[in-house]
Length: 474
Image (cartoon, rainbow, N blue to C red; front, side):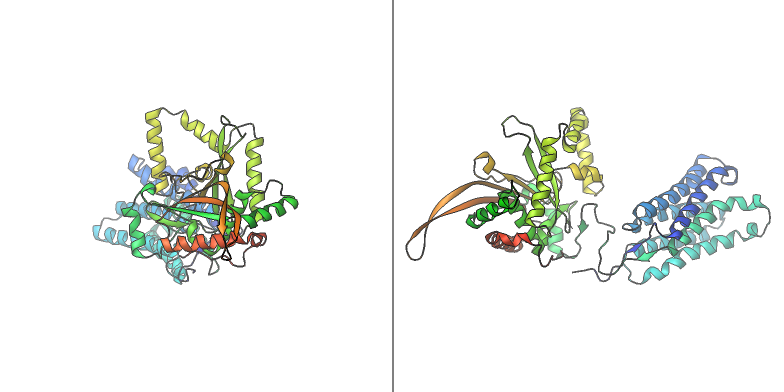
């Protein structure tokens, strides 16, 4: 299901107009700083509102356009609102009529709101309105300054230079705007760096996260036994093909990814009482030991898997991460981050963790922290079989957004009586999952695990990519 009524705008660094826009914006900042005697009275209020505020707006616009313009151009609405605030303050100081000043404020709010709405893609053909959105206030300001512009003295025109360069830069920037092809999804307001917000869920599903706030009061438990005769045969075959360390973990992971290709809802997560989808980025976390001994240090690996991955792809990614951990004498990024946090005194550390939770709630946690965090991902998996015990039901973490925790234990044999009365011995693997029930309902989970078992009954299907990868709802 694709958002057909949403368009996605972008600007490219390969476009000369984008660089001309950046040049004009930076020039406007230079003009405001180089000509302080022509701008304001030098008082603190004028310094902040007439020099620093528009300068920050211009530089922020350039930064967003050049660094994030191809995927997150909608964020240029932030400097546009800053510029609108500057324009309103400037006009209020230079226009004696409060009525006209009030009308100008209303016009600025309208133009900034319209710009925000258009760049967010909520109006399919409204890109045509972007030019008059900038051209109208430009014409108004030029009209107000007409007396100065008609004077040949540069000293009289000097105070306008910063404003004119900013407006010219905005105009060139709008000429550089292009539209992404329809059918492709690109981030917009409300999305996070690690997922896009799902907006088309039923109202009850959007209200539930406010009623069931914490992950550890919203979980369900699932247990099953998987017959592994075919899986063991498949493992022996893969080892003969050169995947010497290929084992149950790789098969279960590949099967999980393959099932997520048909049921993408399991790759959702909940953050800030909103439900998000990771799309095709299945983030898998697992605790590993550098050595198989009770006192050996532990660390966590994080893999970025895909519903399109084959069993061989999963194996290569997994082994590369494990070898990196075992062969690196220094600590991992996670260990280093935890070490830095451990240096903070207890009371301050408690505040730091609260601040991290607050930033995470609003989707403002830095990307590097999301990458090293074992609490942010799609699935945490653990092998109790390597410890020689049965699988456990592991709790979910209230910190972060991990919606699923899986475990499998030792293999076991079971005697089963067939219809003809004969007794056969079969080998099983017990698996247990703790799942956040707020991301999908019980029917969806049931369908997912039934398909998961069907895939594992025919593990040879994992040698080829899936025929189709279903996209999650919008």
